[in-house]
Image (cartoon, rainbow, N blue to C red; front, side, top):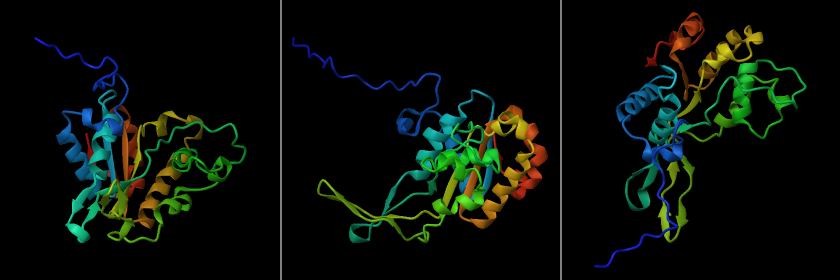
Length: 242
């Protein structure tokens, strides 16, 4: 009897990532939360502003990165032959937070520290001193105004290894996710007066860009602190999922 010897250099990927959140590239190892992913994706597609909250350690970040993002950005082929194109539900901007520290190189004034935190992630190559003086409404047009209408070709057809990938059409909407949103209450407590201004910036941003959707994710134990500010946001932030 002959026994095959497996390649001693081959290592199977470990589907268990440990205590850290799953990342988007690990979505194929992310099991058991299909229904939650479906409900959350339906919420963010249907409403311009949504809130997702859960207890600490419930896997919110994993659900976002390995569940929601792959579902919203999965490319589906539509049509055949020369009429084929690729479609995805939403375009998703980099996930941001409101609690980042201020870079030591920042010497100018910061208009709103919570908006500034988000802009640092959205514009990683920009001068922090210039970002500090901008609002979300002033900065985001660089990412949202590409002068391409929804449904038009966003990425042309590409040929690779003798096969043609159909063109990708532009999605109808763009999603901006604020993860760990409880940081608006825990980070930069000395600048608490800027919280109201941040909420007003989000409201103005959504009014300016009707195809932009925003999702806040946060720990459930900070929900009570958010409720008094809900009136500053569209629909008083009533579209929620727990």
